[in-house]
Length: 171
Image (cartoon, rainbow, N blue to C red; front, side, top):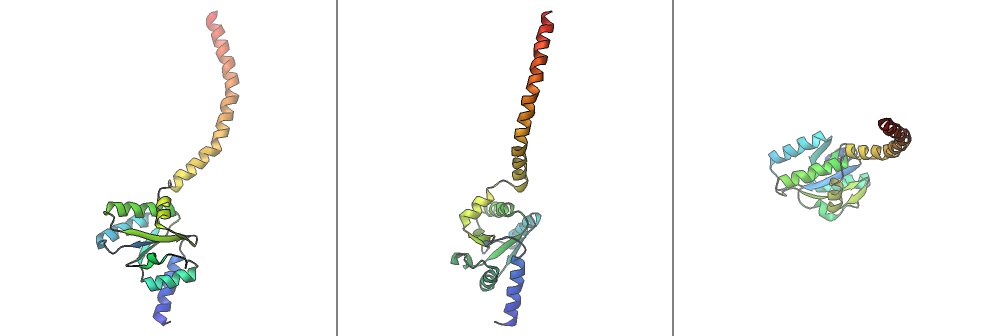
C-alpha cells in the first residue's frame, strides 16, 4: 500500500475511533449549502460529517473491526457521520435533514459498537427519546415508589384530621 493511502486510512481510522458509532449516508444529490447546514446541525450534537473514498473507508472500517457492513453501504458517494455521545440524537438529526431536503440524502447503514446496523435499525434508533428524556423517565421510575409510600403514610394522619374536622363542624 502506498504511503499516501496508509496515511488516509489512518486518518479515517482515527476519525472512526472518536465514537462508538458510524453512520454512512449517500450525499450525491445534496447541495453544498445543504451539507453545510447538516454539518452545523450535527455539530450541535457533537458529531462530524466527512466525505470519504469508499476504498479507504472499507480499509479503515476493517482495521476498526467493522468489516461486516453490507456492500450497499459502499456504493456511490459516501459521507461518514461520527462523534458525539448521543447516537440516537445524531440519527434523529440525519433523518430530519433527509426529510426536510425531500429525501435527497439517504442513510445507507452504519455500525454501533462495531455491530452492523441496517437503515431500518438506524431509523428505529432515531425514533427513541433524547438522552435527557430517557434519564428523566428512569428517575421518575425510581421516585414513584417513594412518592407512593409518602402518600400512604400521609393518608392516615390526613384521615384523622378529616374526621376531627367533621366532628368539629357537628358541634
